[in-house]
Amino acid sequence: MVNSFFFIAFTTLITIVNPIGAIAPFIAVTHGYTRRQQRRLAQKAVFVAGAALVACAAVGSVVFKFYGITLPAVKVAGGILVLLVSIDMLHAKESRTKGTQEETQEAADKESAGIFPLAIPLLTGPGSILSTFMLMDQADSVASQLSVYLSIALVMATTFVVLTQAHHLTRLLGQTGLNVLSRLMGLVLASIAMQFILDGIKGALPGLG
Image 1 (tube, rainbow, N blue to C red):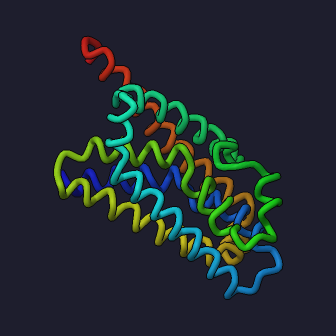
Image 2 (image 1 turned 90 degrees about the vertical axis):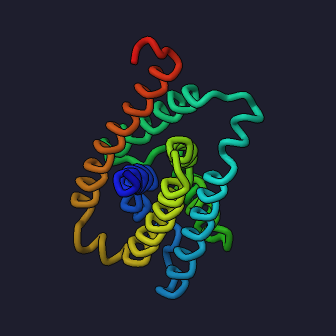
């Protein structure tokens, strides 16, 4: 059970974070940087993004209870948001929920680029935050909760490797190859989003279950 939940958590987060989709913005932001500077910026970005998701996993339920937000509402809202992200991925476009091209260009020469726009909202955007909330709610044991935290750590480690090898991956796969991978991840993410929505509707209207 724990292994299957870990698989669900990891696949959900790796597709919504979408390290492949972060390659082009990362290259744009780090244009003119040395390899060492790029590595340092990638390290900063994944650390901040990972810390944000861990914080969301730890306090998400408290926030929702404080505002009186029900889980079905979160699932439907999160599912719709994740579905919008997946549609952009299916069209091999960067989702506007993860920032705009103008914001990326504006931050290109700033020291804070590792935080904005790379860490937030590119890697940790509304979709990944809501997905983390929902995964933690579905975790029915301490082991399952630890699986979510482990998934966050592995997703960020994978993202760090992808970003530090961004130029090599671009030359190896080409833009077409990157687009194909993005579309495949988008298809998986669309399925996950629809499941979120269906679960939310069933939770709000138990008779449908």
